[in-house]
Image (tube, rainbow, N blue to C red; front, side):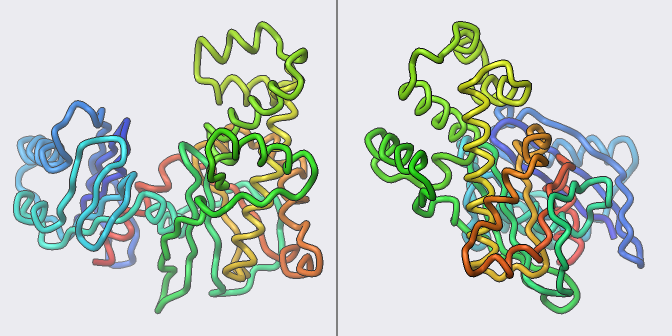
Length: 331
């Protein structure tokens, strides 16, 4: 069974042709990375991709296609948040000559991809005692804060999308109460995404800087001005070279654990909690120090539930593409 899979982002797009055999084992045949903004839409890009393969290897008979999109999907329509692309699965079927095309949110694709991961793709923060076929929680900080719930259906997990990252931020200590007050004045509504994503880490740093301006270093000010502010805070926070950045990283990891625990309790994720997204692998040393899991389990009378839930970090950056391929094979 030949399938076409895509991981569609505002910056880059990965397209892949893969074959699934009778044992559902996948072999990657072709893969290419594109700069998304160089193309008018995904259909043109995919057509060019397939045309190049056909010229080199002859005609293809594709069984299905699935694309994980960095944006909302409603039925068979979707759009990429940071591009002008509007996607229509019916149009793509006709233009590409593929009988089955599915569009899913990129974080749903990550959820499907969990099944395809190996032991080397996962870092365990809390072993727990997973219950077979129980729901799993998925959370991932990157550009935003993605969330999802995995439920067992027939012989595999299906992904229920969520916009839980936009739920109201709930502070748990005096410092976080101050942080919330600070952000309310800036944004009005303050969600978990305001404090638990790349920009959220910067928001935390700016709160600490404005609270104690004498602690801001000239080197940190320059690093944030010259480059990616979130990367500057995380690098200085991890290596301990800047006091404010270290404090910001600690608060960030704590809040990450708090919301992961909230989601775990909401869906009773006895199957485990998976932390995905682009940030976690880059700050894995901080996540390993116990800050996240301590906050995850700080649930009062419910600690007996959370402490037996496995907490794992997804380290493979291609998990979304893997999930889109697996979803395509099931169409």
